Every structure is written in C-alpha cells, then in structure tokens.
Amino acid sequence: MKRLFVVALLIVVLSLAAIGPVSAQTAITYGETVQGELTSEQTTQNYTFEGTTGDRVVIAMASAEFDTRFALLDPAGAELISDDDGGYGTDSLLVGFELPIDGPYTIAASSYGGSATGPYGLFVGTLDTLPALELDSEVEVEDAAGLVGVFSVTSAGEQGVTFNLVSPESSDAGMVLYDAEGSEVAQSNFSSDGYPLGPTILGEGSYILVAAGDGPSTITAEAINIPSLEDGPATVQITGLTDNVGVVRFAAVAGETVRFTVTIEAAEFFASPTIEITQPGEISDVAYISSIQGVTRLSFDIVTPSDGVALVTLTSFSDVEIEISLEHDPAE
Image (cartoon, rainbow, N blue to C red):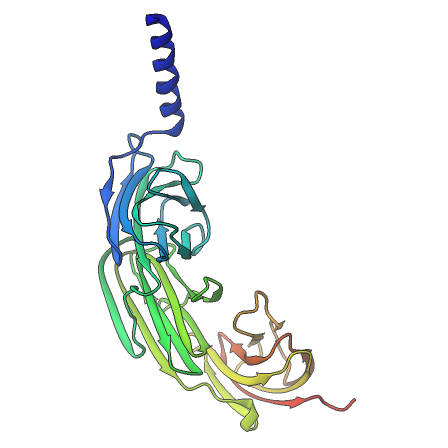
C-alpha cells in the first residue's frame, strides 16, 4: 500500500510539473488593468474575478516582450475558452464572451508555448462597464506595461473619427478598433507623431478601442468631418511628412460599379501617392493603387462589395494636391 501511495504521489507531482509553475490566485475586478511579470518560477499567473450569469466579458492581455496567451476557467476550474493572438499583433483579446453561471472565474495569464518571461498588462471588464473614451478628449496613462488600456467609444450616428497613441518608450505600440461583436474595424499605423488610427467612420453604436504600449502613454480621440464625394469633386491637400493622409467618403451599394477620376499635381516629380478604398467591416481593401509616380491623371472602376459608407484614403510622403470625383454606374 505504501508503495502504491508513493507511485500515485509521483504521478501527481509529474502532472503539476508538466503544467508549469503557477502563481497563487490574485483578485481582479471589472474595469481594472493590472501589471504582472512572468518569471521562470511563475510562467503562469492566475487572476480571479466574480462573475454573474450573462455577463459579456472583455479580457485583454498585452506584452512588448513575448507572445501572450490566456485561458478563462469556470468556477470549477474547467477551461471555457482561451486566446492567443486575438488582439494587436501577438497580443490576446476576448470580446463579449457570455458567462454561463455565477461564481469566481479565473484568468490564467501565460505565453504562447508556456515558457516566456517578461512584464505584461491584463484587463478584465464587461461590455457594459468599459471605461469611456469620449470624442475630442485625451487619456493619459503614467506607466503602461504592454497594455495602455481598453476603452468604450460611442457614436450617436455616422461620425468621422481619428485616434492617436503616443507611447515614446514603446518599440511596438499600436491600437485596434473593434465593433461590439469583436470584429476589427480599423488598426493603427506608424507616423512621426505616434500611432494614428483612422480617419475612419463610425456608425451608430458602441465600439471597443484596445491600445498597447509601454511607459507613459497618451491616447487622443477626435471627431472630424470627412468630405463626401456625393456632394461633388473633392480636393485634398497633402503636405508630406507633417500631414500625409487625406480621406474622402462615398455611399456604396453592393454590386455597384463606381468610376473614379483622379487628377494629381505634385510638387516633386518623384512624388508617388497611393489610393486605398475600404469599407468598414470588410476584411480586405476594396481597391489599392500604389506608387502613382509621374502620373497626373487616371480613371478606374471598382465594384463595391456591400452597402454602406466607403472611404477613399490618399497617402503621400511628398507635397501633392489631388482632386477626385466619382460616377455611379457609369455608361460604357
């Protein structure tokens, strides 16, 4: 009997070793962002929160030093769902998962592969309790550790917006905007002034903005006017590195052919603007024309994939003036 007990104990010890070093439970509440650090002694760290049946939770984990991963465990310790790269880059994100019962839930924060170490940020909340980021406002975070924050953005109707993240100590900062169902709407780029997202257009409803970065960080949200090509031709002035993006919009109808006419006046011959046509909610570009060097006028047709607003984004790193117009269902 004693020999059997020793064998059983050895099996338990080996099973725990296979899971990897795990920390004690740390309490976290809805709306809270915590900073942690995976070490060789603790390659998984557990956080518990009290959940209620029907809560639609949002969990985000980000790190500049490793590929994050987390698992959500129910009150009995069984895994409900996990995420690896659902967020920005290799960060993790879960949006709107509905809790099945009341009780204490656990977030097991770790890395892809289970052996990485380094600092990270972790957030948990619900769709109804996310901190609000108002348009024409600014949020400052004194010391982010991978995750700057998760915010709710509300639009009362069709609204042009732009966001910017400034995170000077970050080597891989960025933002992603999602709709309330967790589908990506837009992702940030890089510029000399930070990590801008947009311009884009929001419809009526709530959106989720997730920002990743390190150290002191600032997020700004701005409501803007995006000219409509339905009102006639639009002229866009682009001044190279200081203001290198211009955006106009038009009303798209699924399956409709739209013809664009573009006239370009460039200050330098080597100017090579690009044209990108997108529809919020579509995974890929509707059209993309790059490096239009030496071209002064062009015309092209596209077929729009779905109903709704569509955006034409004009980008150049040299000074250009671009006039653009459209024609719906042009005659051959």
